[in-house]
Length: 153
Image 1 (cartoon, one colour):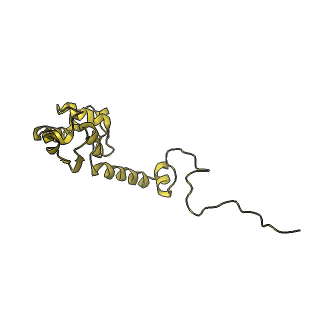
Image 2 (spheres, one colour; image 1 turned 60 degrees about the horizontal axis):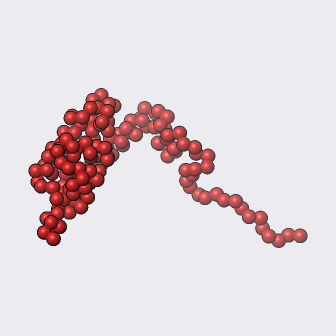
Image 3 (cartoon, one colour; image 1 turned 180 degrees about the vertical axis):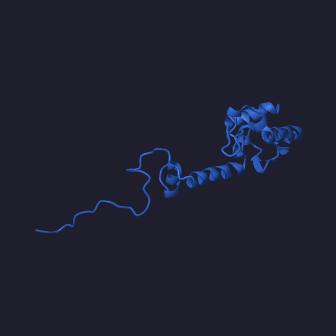
């Protein structure tokens, strides 16, 4: 019973509160910009058991995780980052947290500004990646089939 009491239910890493009841590799996916593969790589780089419960880790293990997450983009090859060639700077970056959403918004705004096809599709609220639009993705008032009025001759 003493084992269950020393668990931390929330572990703060970066700007995110992670679930301490989950394993390290599952809990790390709670950070925006960290997926399943990235979380496994981070836990191996930090020399932490990825199957251990995050809330049961000692402070040293959590601090190692924090340090690896902060330096992840510089320690891995460019193909493992989520932004291998930044449009503005040309360098490889790995964005985390709110930076992911901000970069996506900046990219969409740039496409709108240069008036490329994808930017125009974003502006008009249409499908961007080549999906069919004849019968799906309709918005606005519903148009149905009108029934004939009964009665007559």
